[in-house]
Image (cartoon, rainbow, N blue to C red):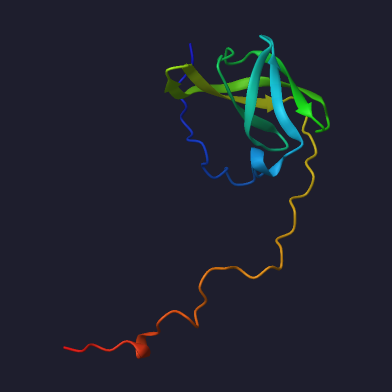
Length: 138
């Protein structure tokens, strides 16, 4: 039975915790497998100390597991322990679970890409009305 997730997804990490990166920031991970029980899963986010995955099966909390990364990510496998499991969604196709795994040994993540120097398409302050440009006609 899955426990209730007391930490909502996307919550800011505790002070000093390694930053999490969303799956979209790690395109070298195309999928993952959590064994046992040998279930396929989708990466939600990852840090140097663990990951959050979505799966159709909820492994038992406290269970020792091996995570195998599909794609070109290295390391290809890492050992860990299931530390949290919660229902993520209920759909006609079945229940989806968020499964948090704490790694036994920290991994190294490539540094995040530098922000680009491209100019944003958002309006600039110069195009926005300033208070002295606004007048009350009444």
